[in-house]
Image 1 (cartoon, chains in turn cyan, blue):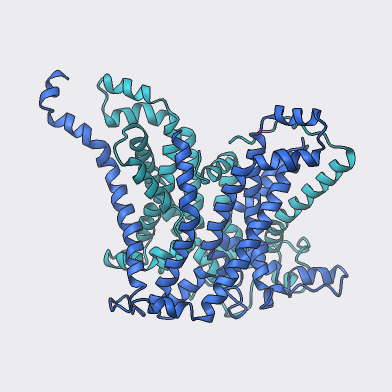
Image 2: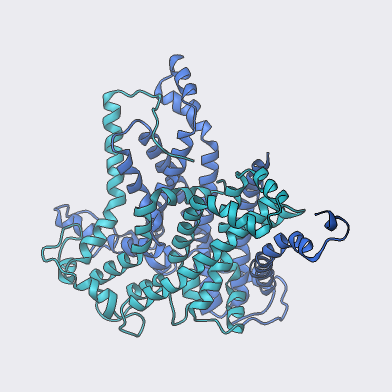
Length: 292
Length: 299
């Protein structure tokens, strides 16, 4: 699944090439304009947006909207800014990613190196769980979280994200470990190495690349989740739900500049991951199309 | 080792059971939280549940009511419009960009990540950005007026008949780069010798792509179709952030329908029935695909 450049066999004439470049650049603009609009308008005073041009750079640069979005904007009824929700998201994402990745690695190891009768069916059932519309589990999940005393809490959200995250993490590790020579594992078994020893000494040391892919995927998915956050977050909502509250609030003046600053704040962690490790991000997306 | 051949000691037996033991929590949670919950929601869809779940059996009444509701018809009609345009436009843009990028383009390394970064964003962020860009008062229309194009009009997001197309625009913006990446990976996997041979035979670029390359991209077409259609059916966040389902009900989708009937309109039975229909639709697309993919894996 590498998309590194290679020589194309096709030769084009000059006009075609110009046309191709123009098309490619127009699309680059299409993808960039919203980002530009968000950044430029988050650095303007509100009057420059309502009375001015959205596509223009700020005449008077200000970071006031950012400060407001972060610490004083009205979210729901409280003027807390997005900060507490950003922290909620971090407290939720970190354990959920770690736990679901560890479980996924162990599952992948069992499903490829300790195969047993019926393991393909179990994998198939876990795989399908990645793609269900979560609307089908919302009602019983709300009841169960209520019974466990976890509704409206970050712990509840961690549980939800782990439960619905292990399908994908298992898929990643399973596909990755399937390509790892089983003979090596057999040899270690004959030498008397146990289940965890083999995992620890043989499988984990080669799992670097897939772990990066898995962690990035889970991080992006869980950070960007809205449905679970808004359904089960209660007062402890994650960033996405808080941003939506901020933007949709019907009271007072619409502070577009604060909304844009908030949107960038909500996008920042995943965007950073994409900038730093884009290659792995793409690989994760591709493996999301089932094959590793 | 020899001793354990006859009567395996505790440690050896543990080793035999360990793999299954390690897998069992996942089997249990998947069984309960995925399949148990699916069955429970399925059951609720046959009950008279309103604000809270109850167990008064009403047979198919919820389904009858569902298909009688104009609100539901609006939702599935919208899904039809949204999903077909979203899939078609993403595929056309993705394929075009991938083929163009594959022509020894200078700066490919810069362009590719630019096309793909929206995929890293939350739909709530995408929705927020496009909500204001498409807003006639401060967005594109206003900009065009300020740039001197006074007659320019673009108020789709405020227009019941056109609002659903703004959802398509935002969703295409988010996902088309991803489709590009899938096609590009497919293109880079094609053996260049085949293309060279065809060119020696005198095939034009156009013919080469239409007759040889595009047919060879079948797996990429299939994967992107499956992924896009499942994203379309699950679409919820984007609608909430971009239009809130409005103006009126003009951009309601099954996912927003389910949420409002279950949690704000006190018709949990009907909500459950709509969730079941969403699941069945996705299953009809995903199961054959996953089956075929995992089959191939083993050969």
